[in-house]
Image 1 (tube, rainbow, N blue to C red):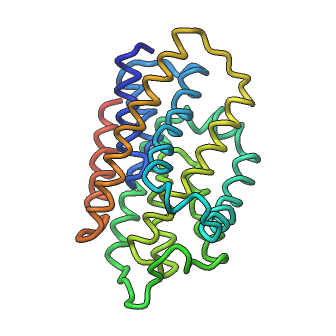
Image 2 (cartoon, one colour):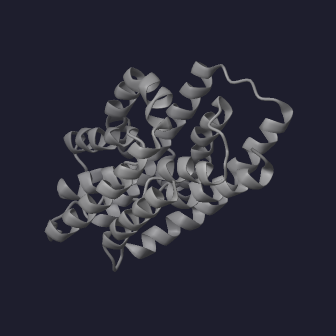
Length: 255
């Protein structure tokens, strides 16, 4: 992997992490199109630069996060299912699922269909939960369980948590922002755990490549978060579902 490829992947990660279109799918498939071999470094790179996007959320929501124990406790509860299942299935995910391009493509297509169907059936109630502090701990746990489905590459973490939250009676702004914040403990844990398990040792050039991708991801993620918050004020997620289907089909023919 060279610096240009690192920048491209960083931009893709930053833009897709918070949109319901699966950042992992886009990273893996972009690596395939760029002819980047799936080495241990590349796999770790794809995980660690996600934390660059997460830092964008920390930056944008720093006032809401620091010292706000009501929100922190809810995020902790929501993280529990993914934390436990991630420990159990780590080897399967990294050793097998991330290498399955076919699985990723079909999850893109199926996820798009489900997203469209959900939006057609869902109608937000007037008494929908309209603040993160009003989310119950039971709802947090269920949202966290929904997030854990996204351990399967191609299943969007953002889409899984947003659909789960909407189904539980949260309004769009509340669940989208909660999904943003839930990414912080989730991706931090994933990045640190992967570095520990792989005992990652990077050469000087690899550290530079990782740093560039990390920074690109952070900058673009700031833009992506602001875009999605503006988008949901007047729109639903059907266009993202359509995109997933079209992109998935295109990927099938591009292989």
